[in-house]
Length: 311
Length: 249
Image (cartoon, rainbow over all chains, first blue to last red; front, side):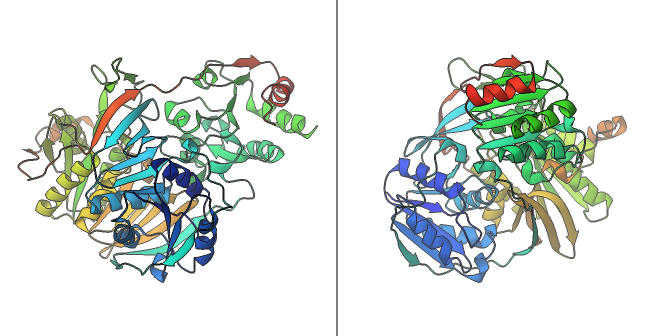
């Protein structure tokens, strides 16, 4: 049985979530092939070929794959993936968008957001915002799976020497077009791969006050995160949201500032190694999961923290 | 333009769920059920489309036990016109739900299907994409903005890096994020009116769909619980502990 991994990339670089997915694929056994669908994306295919454990890279290079639109991409994944025992993609917004479409076209179930592989047909996945873990077995001939990055280490990006084979484009249904995107630019590390994250909740009060978080984050070389409430309030853009339906993170250190600790937020960060909570409400549920809790006003604690870290 | 909205009856988001001692699942006896919050935003968007003169009729669909009727009534009270309940006491997994929805779409011929991007119980995030695939329709997932104009739907999608806009030819499926809108509370007169709106009941076999589960749940367990740590008295003490005890900075 071979496993097909659908690569996530921006036509220039392979996204790190693909490396975690390759580790999950290795646990299924069999050859690992990586499908790179893009436009002028040969550098991505070359990067994928170097990843340890990858036997073959399939490159579909065509203008219709310049952006990962679900409609053409799913037809390609079905055409290529039909002969595989399993098709895996990272549980990113791209994977979540495309893979259920692939599963439906193959008439098989999808197993979403797995955090462990028990055997080639049995997986563990969180349900109810991670308040329960379900072990599920698929009876389908092809396992279609999205992979939670925090559940698997990244496969080494160097050391492999896979062959690169080109595959032709599949049909373009031509029912959807890419109009544009607003990608947040930041010098800070990417949330899902950051070693340290400093995160703010509704209690931050304003967009302006988030600068206090940013100042601490920059001292630590950390990424900035937020709760849904802080995003909904317009303090920060949506791509910073951590939680049940936002990003799932598990950094070495997670600093939660003015975050009460709703289960929907905990779902996205409770696997962090060390959790620090700073909140003026000593009853806040976040303290029940924090390794270190500081009951303090953020307007005092954050500037003080930035200063202490400069010492 | 007819709009079909699919809504799911789920354990309320405020409920702290408990895993059954025998590991067979989550205990749902005597807990509060409500409409999946993402589906509420889907209903709200449909009603706004109708108020803006873009939608002519809103059909709200739910699947599951008889109590799912209550969830449909909530949608009717928000402003949907009629309901369809696909009654089944069996476990309905996303692929089965997508097939049932496709059968209803074939019958009802809507131009737009709206669903929440994810149900907060099984967290699958699959149904909208699957029904779009089965219909051969385009999809706009994780929508925080929807503009319907001249046979097209422009959907602003929340993606990992920020926002993306795609243009879809109608008919299309759109799965919605909570940021799309703020759902209204149904007024008492509208709740009363909703009681008179028709709900049709069909079964999976009426629709000719095999809903047999493809995934078998072997066990459900509680995740490892984190222990509360210590309170520190000052920022200096915190930084000290992070440096010397936790050794993370």
